[in-house]
Amino acid sequence: MTNEGLVGRVGTVFTAIRGGERAGEVRLLVAGIAHYYLAYAPVPLPAGTEVLVINSRGARQIDVEPWPAVPPGEITRGVEEGL
Image 1 (tube, rainbow, N blue to C red):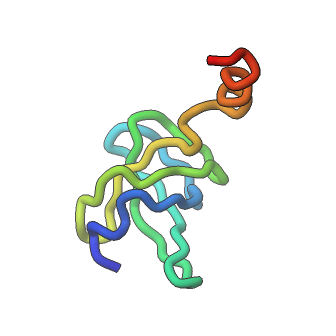
Image 2: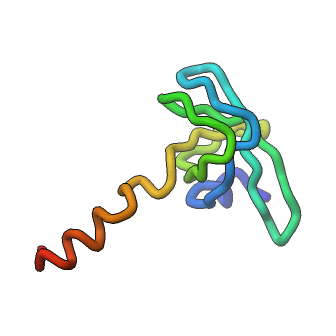
């Protein structure tokens, strides 16, 4: 998997990310095969959290953010209110 091909993929935090420059580990499925990457996020994220890859640092290191970024219910609330 190329570094550019990682951006935009959704994965799962495997080992908790401690936030800042303290990495955790994220599992991404690529063609049905699990790949593990050191992952960094601005805030701590517990194991099991779904994340979006926003940057590849190379050498199996990525930056992530929680996914979905919009809390569930926010989208439907706006639709119901006609926004």
